[in-house]
Picture: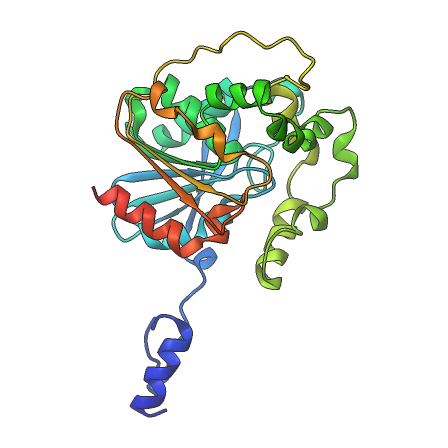
Length: 309
């Protein structure tokens, strides 16, 4: 392969990991073969994580239905300057899957994040969360402020804002019907690994998701909804009292895809009223609920730039 051919091969590969002895381009090693895997003990529950890079700690929390691999592009972007640790939430993939709805209470999910940070010998971290991971991240920042360096939220409004939308926004109530269905007895019995992975683009990535979901516990996944999802169901219900939450002390970045069909963008309105630090909100016009994959390059760039400030 001559120099001109190598140049265009590099462009096609998006990056040159190197050249072999013959001077040909070597494709970059997949991230799943480069991360370091580990386990933290959270009061007897083993929590799996994948780690890449060195530097200040960033802990990333996925949602439903997902696993640590959802953050692969953001891990690549941030690992140049950070140690990026993507967790499998309890019930998912290689983390433990304790039986019983009570084992998925929010306090325990927050405790899993605390356990991972302490296991890594750190005192604090940047916390990044999407979907249920974002719900956990909000609560972590409220209840472990001394361990929260910065907070990055993808998709999920502050719990006070979300409660407001459920009480006043008919569209959000309609969009939350799936959560009501997940709260029904036996709802997990209709789930399959292939069905849960249907949203993933690309055959190779989808196959990895199917494998991860085959290792997961579908009932545990739905315990998140049964244990923690707000109970307001219809406009005929009496409005719940205004919720009160500890104020967030860390700087906050919110990234939301405007095409999200599960969480209405209006839920982020007035979020700054519950935060005692700087707040940045980014609305991505063409992205949906899985914004970290729908707009992967943009989310990675926004994250890297914001963390450098």
